[in-house]
Image 1 (cartoon, rainbow, N blue to C red):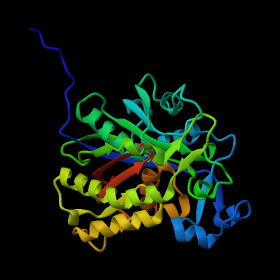
Image 2: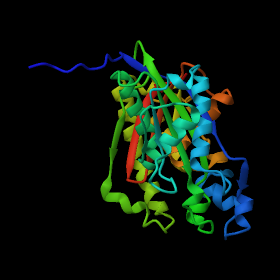
Image 3: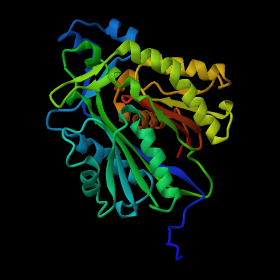
Image 4: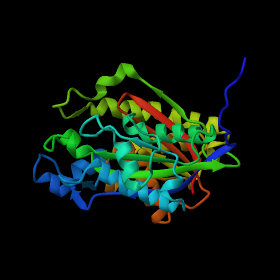
Length: 325
């Protein structure tokens, strides 16, 4: 029987470039206190957020994804014509058709490439990195642009303090390309579909609903083991980690995950992403936003070993170890 031809793959993959974008409008806790029963102290105590960014009415999710994606391509030293596929992780498009990715690809100048959206909510960027890495490793695409982009303010009741104090808008991106050895570890991922009611949008006319305390308990007990599994799959020790970038859901959750990793051997000088303080929870955009901001601030450097772990509605979760560009 005649066998089919298949693409030639690569030994490994790596992140070649990063990019991010946030809207100009900064909304402080004091700003929110003017429209709902809350305060700066109340918000900081519960979720650790001081400020967040809100997009304007005319600023679309696709606009933010284009800005972040174009920066990542340039940071990678590539031209749009070098990109072989575009993946947009998002759960907040205003409608399901058309998808974001095809529009983003066209506007960046990536012509005729496969482009699709991926919805794993706040775990979406890690899902997309895992998928993009596999596409490159298999030889299906030489370079993949992965973007996490959200306009959560389209889906949040602006007077509901259980969600309006948390969620924000933005986009972050990474370009994944081939490498002689693995610089992106295997993805540790999964789902808990029996817990879908914890975070959901009931219908197309509804706002995001979240059982805050239930999500907090789940994340603080279940995510550290997923993070440790990603380290194990990468074939390294927890002590080899330089950087921890959890989804920026809640500062208390971030610190709880870091504490559990240190109890398992992570170093005291492990750099922890705390971008939530000034960016809020941007769902699938939070991990790439944090990475780009940490790099710009000089908190991380090229070659650092970073553990990424996302978790959110679905409930979905994913993590992988990567070497920073």
